[in-house]
Length: 175
Image (cartoon, one colour):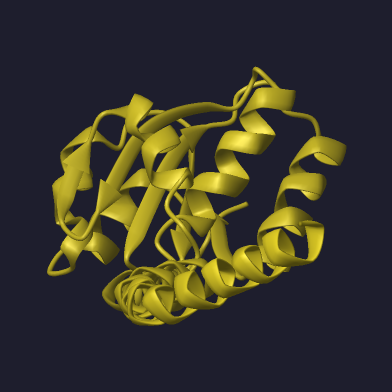
C-alpha cells in the first residue's frame, strides 16, 4: 500500500512521540509469522500496554532521530516490528521474549534501554526486571528488615526472662 506524504508525516510524528517517552524499545524480525500469529502478538502487546508497530525502516529512522533510540537507526535493516514499553522498562521485553519462545519465527534483532543499544540476548535481563509494584514491595521489605530486627533484639531479653521463669516454675511443679 502506497502512502502519501501526509500519512508518512503522521506515522513519523506518532512514532517519535512514543519514542520520546518510552524507556525501552525492541526491534524484532517477523518473517514467517502468519496473520493469526501477528494478531495474537498485537493482542498481547495491547493487553500489556505496549506500543507495537510495523513501520518502514526509513520512516522509523526519521522518527527515532532526536530520541533516546537514535542508536537503533543504523541497525534497522529488513522487515522489523518495533515495540516500545510505555510505562515499565521490562514490559515490552517480557511480551516479545515470551512470544518468541512459543514462536521461533520472531527473532529479536535490537534491544535499547534509555539510549543504550544492548545485545539481543539482553532481552532476558530486561524482561526479568521487576515491575513497579514488585520493586516497591522489595524496597519496603529491605527498609523494614532492620527495624524488625531491632524490635526482636530489644524484646529478646524480656522473652528470655519469661522463658526462664516458666522453666523454673515447671521444674518446681515437677519436683
